[in-house]
Length: 185
Ligand code: GLN
Image (cartoon, rainbow, N blue to C red; front, side, top):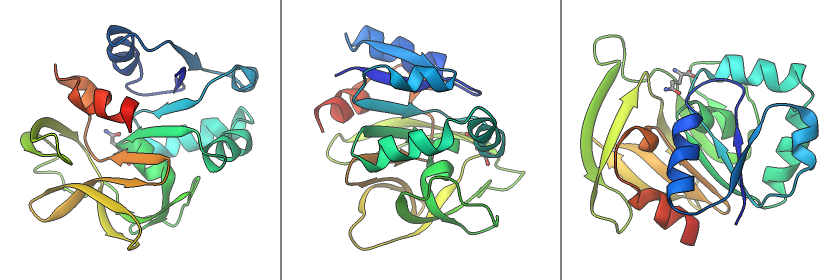
């Protein structure tokens, strides 16, 4: 496995450190020509989805990256990355890649509870730490989307074919189990 980490904006460095600690080679996607390099896995980090979407278009990376996702590269998307994948954004008219049949709500936890930490069950890993930062959640998912985790009844992690998407930031906690699962999945 060789992972490309989208490195236009947001929290990408932390993902690279975890992948490296697990022995997974990775490199950063910063410009269009980086997409010509060989990779079979992709990390879409957290940050600001509107900024990331705009930069992807400006740098002419949007269409080739969408094709790479559609052709089956293994994707791990966190927070803003989930918003980029979502087919629908409940409180935003934008659609970015739209490759995952879920409807998300941006900044879903409001101002009061903008950022928080919890521990919840993820797939069959048991409880894992979850850091939420102005996070979206998945409002609804098509029936063929596998729900991996819920917090307070809201879907915060899901898998659809090659795409795993999370509301939270797994890279910010010292726990690599989710990555180990993702690498094997
Ligand atoms: N609120 C951000 C957005 O709408 C996502 C926050 C994050 O990635 N931590 O894109």
